Length: 276
Ligand code: ATR
Image (cartoon, rainbow, N blue to C red; front, side, top):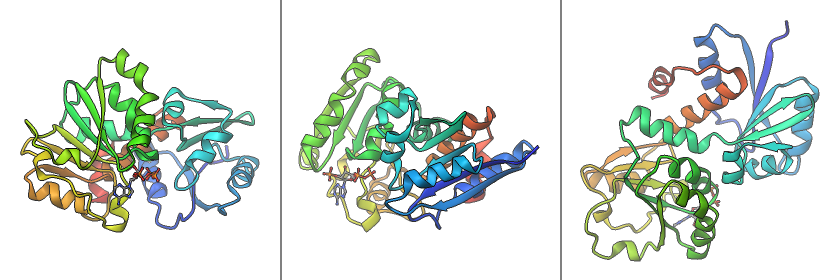
């Protein structure tokens, strides 16, 4: 039997840890797989996907900047991909392309499994309303927090994002609200339970001008970025919060993709530890 082939497609792609993560998972089950890094030209995502399909690849992870194009070319979409408006996991079967999104599930699983923080009945502050923020909205709401407050530079964008989740929020009894970074500086009764940074400000080391009163000793401050301490993480740490980067999210989203493709649930804790 030929070896199952998978890939991660992005631009750039050299930095991707996905091949190492998926190989570590495969090893846990004694499986041999091929998992390649594929650099797609910025105007050549579709052609790259078609080529992989023709070469017999069974699936691909998709990263920046192609998650929206992956959404558009998927012939079937999971509920969470539809909610995210983006796809990070493609499965190829019988010439069909199935799109899923495991990012939000990765974030939630990391918080629940590795940071011992239940989200039910919690007050969550989500910073950002771009692709990364939208990708985690549905899995967060499904945990039945008391409230999800979204703060974004552009208020319109945050309002538009929340509108998409009104039905789910009602279904799970979650109160949704939009606020501004300025309003977050107004006196607050108590710190948030969980603050998630889903902005891309950390990429350029730009501080978010947040009030430190958002963070208390019990607050979990989660940055979706990993690899270094962002200004958000530094501020939260100095304010006494428990600070977490996005490495666990990266590995948990990969574990969910691995499950989609192989029907097997890897043990993520040793892989996270190895990458630290
Ligand atoms: P991603 O896919 O990483 O979410 P995106 O869709 O471009 O990328 O969204 C970037 C997010 O980071 C947005 O919420 C953006 O705020 P705006 O919608 O107001 O643009 C936020 N962001 C980026 N740089 C920021 C900064 N310096 N301060 C505050 N928010 C920032």
